[in-house]
Length: 178
Length: 174
Image (cartoon, rainbow over all chains, first blue to last red; front, side):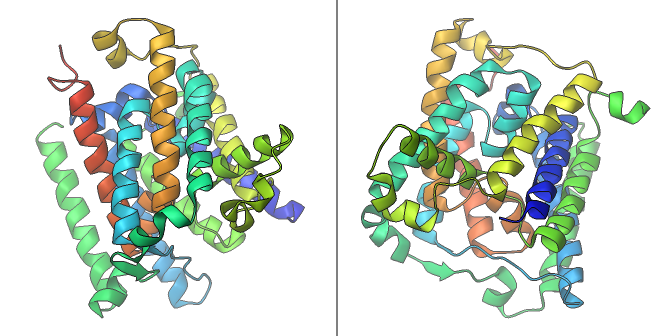
């Protein structure tokens, strides 16, 4: 891997970690608070990032400055894997990105228990791959398609809907003081 | 420098800047932000260090080679960035048991470590099965409007919300 890219990766990671901490997402009580609906910080950060990112990425794509890197998947893998991930999300109280931020923040449960657990879980998966997941990967296989491709509409229609939805949700959250 | 010494920024500001950061990773790295694959590769690297010769034959590690790649460097960057922000804002603290956990399960660090490690196993396994995590699917996938990203993100939260309410009956307030 090129040295230039490693430097850019490191700087991007530092900025990401800085922003995760500033947003409050490196804290267990904030993340678990989202899952318990007592703290909406996480959803505010995520949807702000998704909307801002979406507008920018699709704009840059119009000018052929970037291309998309859509991940392929199937309903079987994404839903079952997602639910298993969710169990861990609540029990650990961090996700793979925010746990790195939690380590930097000084949280020992993340640094000692959590990181080791994530690696162990990934290793278990690798041991069972690919045989154990063949059936699930074929169930509802949508490949790397995007929502606009599925619905056969212009991506900006979806982005517009997403922006409207997000702004409405944020206004409701702010007005209700949540 | 005032802004940098604030412990917390508006989540809307932090989130929007994360969105802008991803424009730059698309342009310069030609990659969307993601974190969980780094843990899988590192698991493979550690396995090899301990002399596990099976690793190179495992189908998964043929596709995701156990070596240091941009994502591992990125995750190390997250640790540094969060550390810098915490340090600048006086928020750096050594904490072993989080508040919500302690309220329900007491201050035992061992118990919290076991729960964190068990949670980590589910998280790591689920992330690999879904093909990404809250960053790769929930932020990067969702912003590209992929079906896999949105379905995964929705199920991350369904699983998380149900589990959190089982672990903390009464919604975190005893």
